[in-house]
Image (cartoon, rainbow, N blue to C red; front, top):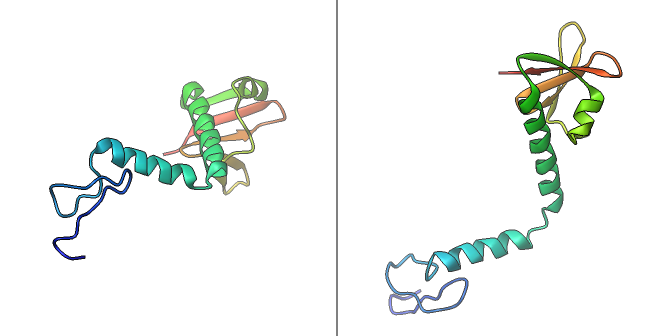
Length: 119
């Protein structure tokens, strides 16, 4: 591009004045351009998974005090989704913990669940 070539805003097409590396005429156009780019991406499933994981973490964080035992139904009532975890951790003794970011849980039996925070 030559020095005399006029640059246009990537969102609205207005002529740009000022810095040579300027891409947008103002913050509004920059925000709108990025919003349109994200909106066009097909990442709906990623958003659903991330929201479910964050919801599960929030629930665990709100009720966990060091090591806590809760009923499965209590978590279900708070809309905890047991399908969404970030990892599975197996101890040397063979216990299996489901991990949601920095919190973990395992079933003691069909109704009771032990929660803990992992650092």
